[in-house]
Image (cartoon, rainbow, N blue to C red; front, top):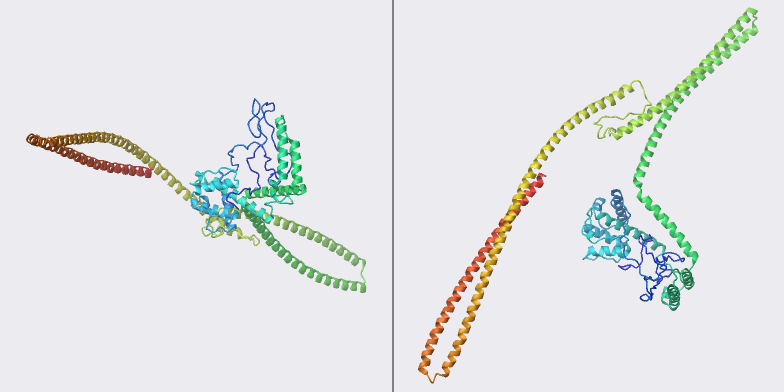
Length: 635
């Protein structure tokens, strides 16, 4: 893979699309849509007389008409629709980035906290790792990283602008969300690239031969025929070329042996994949962990209810078994009593058969039997009523127990929210506020609950009220302290204002002094310049006198033999004159040199004064910084 890839790895549609579609490279490999009607907009001016040639300027008067093969529109900044300034969305993106780095084996150590505001070095490592998943031979350049990274995003087809200035402050709150959005887009690109690479769909082949046929004679002939026909119709006033487009596309299909069924299947597969991507994006926007936690809490509550119901049913089963055992014992006793009654009946029957009764005895026995039957029937009815009443009481007890368990669950939930249970909770203070199951409820249970829960709760309430009152008093005292601090701050602000005024006056004084020193320096420079001019003038005069003396010496040498004595006298006079001139020039040069030395000493003293003024100015600045730091500390 090159550093400047020529294909977009992502199949997501670009946000900025061009209104016109060029047919210069209209091959099946490069079309974003299947072969069909071209999306060529109708020009705005339908009555223009001037026609613009494809190869040059217009040939007629009037408004210009753009050619079919015009250039694309200018670059336009596209606004990112993602809520990058939403804290929840940013946290979700950070979590997604952290999971992606962990799943793909990021070599360094990275944490979610570090990804909240990473440094430029950490960002470069993360970007280099993600980009290496696209290009295994990629190495991050050492210089100009701030320029290379935005350019690489642009080369990959990132649809949103990424400024170079944002690379200088990666972890800043106003730049990190945009950079994080670019990293998330790069992660999606890597995922889609890996998916397409595994399916071998990166370079589909629609032709039987090589793709180099585009440069062949047949393709060039078709393209030139299409261009000539469309251009001829355009120059004749036509605005649409649908027939030519369809003919050109049908010829391309024949040339490249395009399979329409394969294209349709690929379109359907692309639609299914896009639906899956949309579903995954919607699913990624929801917090699945929070939903799973809620589901876990609900299942734990249901499990607790089921366990309570199971314990209740086990206790109810035990009660029923006890009752069944009692009834079986009663049944055995009743059977024994019935057996004894049968024996008694047989004995009485035997006595009756062997013994003669009078009619009065028979009537008395029948009457006693009727009375016993009535008594037995009344006892049976009373037993049924008692059993029905016991059953109703048991149902009422079960309902009451269920309501009590619901109230108990609500109490336990509220106690957990208040951190009162278990016994080691934060607000429990060593007390056990948990109410056990009510299976063994007795007359001492209410007293036990009152002593175990109600009395400690009252004590805790009184303690909380005392603490609240103490905190209220503390709040009032803190408010008074804050007022006092505010008054101190206002005083310090006034002091700071006075100090600033003093500083302003000192600055004005210093500026005035600097102006005076500058004027003095200019004055001294003018004096030095005048001394230099005088020195040069004197040197010129001396040289002129010396030349004249040489000329006179030559003249005297010529007349030497003629007028020796006169020449000797004149030579002596000339020598005297020259001696005087040289002595005057030497004295003047000494005077100028002394004056220059004095001026240099003055300049040295001036430099010392300027250095002392700079030291004083530095002390003033340090004093100002100290006052500012103290004022800030007071604030």
